[in-house]
Length: 252
Image (cartoon, rainbow, N blue to C red; front, side):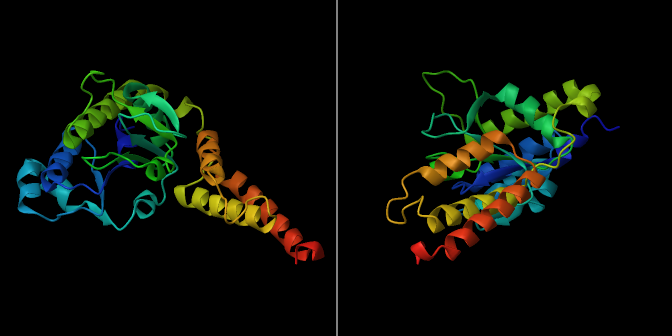
């Protein structure tokens, strides 16, 4: 067995990078650690000669990078998503330090598609973007100056993933979670939309005063790491809830 095979199931996602050099440097960072999958969401400038120059010997990774219109497209097929942020956000996913998160991601990547998401150079990940992640990951930097360059963050993550992969190679088959098929990003987004539809149909969620209920439901589901079969069961139940609500004459 290839000790680094799980790395093939990991994609690194750059959200709206403003500097093309960071895209090229990220491609180089990936290749040095044996990762190949780079996804870029709405880059300000790309392709660009500066990206090519910063990629150096990793032009193959840069050329193979996928450009997406939004984060949902970039996460399609992924069933475990980690988001990097130096700031603690309200209603954020469970927090992990990078080394612990890397071990968790490698365990998942032995049988699932994994995505690691990075925010913009200036503002990082938004609350909405983080709400699509199962984990909030923090690099344990100097608390007095924790601002890292985007490409430097990618390099650190790529290194920790490779180190975790090497350390876990002998135990990958016995790690928990390998039996069930985890729900993909699309599965969860469909379930969340269905939940919101049912809450509106029953009057539980007021259309003019939604508050942050849906965001809290999303965080709960991300934390639960539900399986695809569990999503199907929940959506079947929600279909019956909506049908019952529509059939109630008092709700017409």
